[in-house]
Length: 600
Image 1: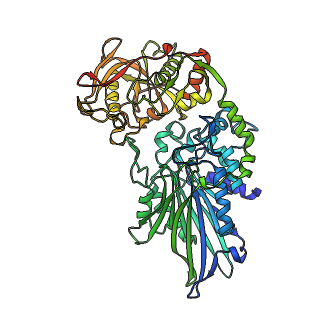
Image 2 (image 1 turned 90 degrees about the horizontal axis):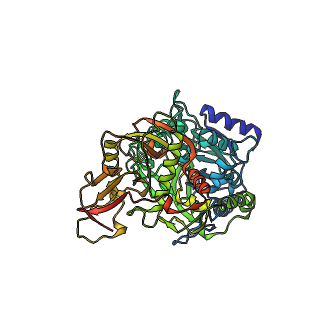
């Protein structure tokens, strides 16, 4: 990148100014994208390419299984595959007639991204360039919207990543908490030259997710605010049109369903992309992210203009590439969008781009070596296969580690004498720690999120309410009815990560009862739980900040917190023990019943 442009990008990140680039020179006639219509008007064809929710996937590699990625549908992953697809489209359309975007969640999600955030951090003096920045720079991304997971490692890491990118990170609704001015560039504008006609100006508005204010509260509170997507789009799109934008594309880290995550009490709609299309005039297309679903093409009619807005969401992890094809016509001194269509290309139809695999071969090798470090030995195989509906020792490992860390942290304080209990969720249905050697990748597959640990002060009554809310996860099943474990959980769409075990207490969950009255025989230390008794509750930061909307936990006093990931604490615990034996951590704290009779 030329030095003057890099300075401009860095300045933009502070002031919130948009990024404008004087665009491509005239392309060769065969690839110019221009021509005349049957009526003699000048025409131009533009292609916008998009990815989203890459979550650190550069290679078609599963770091948890130490093997090529594979699933039942035959999908492949990784920017190396996307690069090949992008090259093919650019060759067909002419690179000067294409724009490459992403809709966020880039720097979190695999051991590769964790390694360069925490083990060999990009923020260290003289530190490395982030692998995602290297890959995306090499592929030639034009702009990327901020995702919520961009904030998981703190603002310092995000700003360093931003500095390393040859493209702007956009977030019109990521604003300074005090001034309410944009903290990142709101938009990107590029000019495409058309032989014999006025240039085409394309504006890209970036929007991120308002849930960041809850999910990464520890990093952003008092520093950044995240107003709703609709209101910020309504503010910025007219400005972009007044600046001469002929085409307006939105890159939105927000799904299209019009809903929010189960239980999350957000002040704004989380998945608002279709709402933006419906409510805000003059948007031509939206690259959708965040929801991890595949939408080749979705047409939404704008309420005010009656015009069609085309949305597309490529499948996460670089499994798909969205392709928007725009047809523009020049009449009465201006360009107008005549039509837009969208589709997705499947990364499993191509091979890796060798330039990308070669570029990051060393980084990949370092991470493979890191995750395959042996940290202990397991006396038996531990698995999460039944952890959703049976108290599984592998989840008890998480709660035991959390209890131990918090107990040690509070030693010598006024809370040292209080009993410490902990929560954990069955994140994965397929995680396994095999008998024998235990590696970092085994433990990482158990705790796939970069959550950190918080200690909260809770009463017995509050914990009872907490457990009742958690128990809503189970589908009501009458006594005597057949039990299908596949249909027993996820009531009302509640995801597995919003069901919590609570260690240290003993209780039954009576699934024959209505939600809200399922917790039975709740005891602590062998006696009925005292509603007034105080406990130290070891909980992950997502839950502590209100994720999942569990009662009380977000509002009760916080006694302690740290920035070390729970995953790391588990690895440290196993390393110190040397031997992973369920006798050291497993306990049966809860069971499912129906009218008092155990289900299993």
